[in-house]
Image (cartoon, rainbow, N blue to C red; front, side):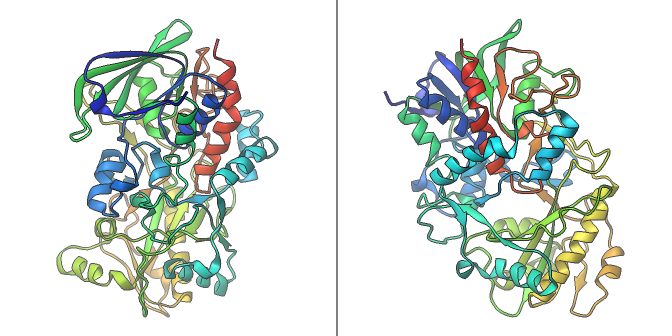
Length: 517
C-alpha cells in the first residue's frame, strides 16, 4: 500500500498518528533510513519542517529558492555573524540544493573515529556494499573532463601546472542538461536527490511524509521515547497554524542535521550528559575571486567537477583543506563579494569573467579542536544559536589556503586575484602573494567565511560520558532513540559529506529496524 505526502494545508485540526518508526528530517540520513525501513514493511512516518516542492516550482531564481529551500531563507549564520551557513530546508533536505558532489569517507577519517572515539563497525569494508548500492541507484559517477565548465577548468589547469594532485568529481545526476542551477533545485529532476529517488521509493512502500511539520519535542517516558510532537506551519508564511501533529512511535530517529538535531534533543530535555550540541564542525570555507581574460559564466555548467586534496594533510598541528569551486549565482555573489558602492558594483559588473575558488578546511583534527556549539535561546524564539569560535589554526590555514588559491588561479590564467576581505587584497601576476596576504586583517568579520557542510553536535562514540550516540547511532541513555544524520560525525570529513551520511544511514538502518518491538 502506497503512502502519501501531506503538507501544512492538509492538516486543519490537531491530529495523532501511529508508526513503527517516526523519522524527523528528510535529508541524506532520513531519506535513506526511511527507504530501508519502509522496504521491510515497517510503518514509517517522516516529519519535515520545510515545504514540499517539486520541479514545476524550481524556476532557477534565487529570489524564490533561498526563502523556499534554505534554513532561515539562506541567512543562517553563527551568532557573531562570522560564518555564513548554507543549509537545506525542504523535502529532500540538503540533497535538494547541494551541488551533487559525492565522495566516500576517507580511510584516515574512519581510522581516527575508531582510535580516538571507539567507533565500532563503521569501516570501509562494512560501508562499501551500501555505497555501491546507493551509487547504482543515484547514478553516482565522474563528471567527464570534456564537459567541465570554465570555472572548474581554471582549478583543474592551475593545479596541473603547479603539480598539485587533482581529480574529477563524482556526481549524483542522470540525464543532466548541464544547467548549473543545482543549488536552486533541479527543474528537470536530473539531480538524483532524495526528493526524486529514495523518498518516492519509500512512499511506494507505505511511507507517509508530513511537510511543514516542525518537530518541537520528543515525548520521553523513562528510558523510551513514545513519540514526537510537531507544530504545523503555514506553507506561505512559515508560521505556526496552531495545529499540532503527534506521532506515536515504537522507535524515533532524529535526522534533522547537525544544527536542528541537537536543538530538538535539547528542547526535549535530552542533554546527552552535557554532550548534545557540542563538537559542531563546519568545514569553514575561505574564498578567492579571480578576473579572467575570457568569459567564465560560473553560473552555467556542472557546479563542481574538479577538486584537489593536495593540502588535506598538512601535519598533525595544522588544519588541512581541500580545493573546489562554487557556482556563482548573482544574488549569492552580491552577498559575498567585498566592497561597497561603486567598488562593489564594479565587481558585480565583471561577474561574467569572474572565477571563484574555495578552500574547505577540515576541522576537528588539530589537537584541541573541539569545534563549536549548538544551543537554545529564549524558549519563545524558534532560532537556534550557533557558536563557532575561529581559533589560531583556522587563521593559519585560511592565510595559507588563500595564497595557494591565488597561485592556482594565476596558473590557470587569471589577470587579477581578489581576496574577500572587507578591504580586499588585490593581486597581480608577479606580486609577492605571501607578503601581501600576510598584511591583511585575519580577524573575525574582516574576511568572508562560509560553510555548506555541517557535521557534529550529537557525537558518536563508545564512551557515554564523551559522546551522544553509540556506534549503532542509538542515544546512549534511551532504548529506542536514534540519531541518523551528519550530526553523529565525531569530526569533519575533509570531503563533501552527503555520501558518508548515505552510507552510514543505510548501514545502521538494520539497528533501527531491530529496535522496533
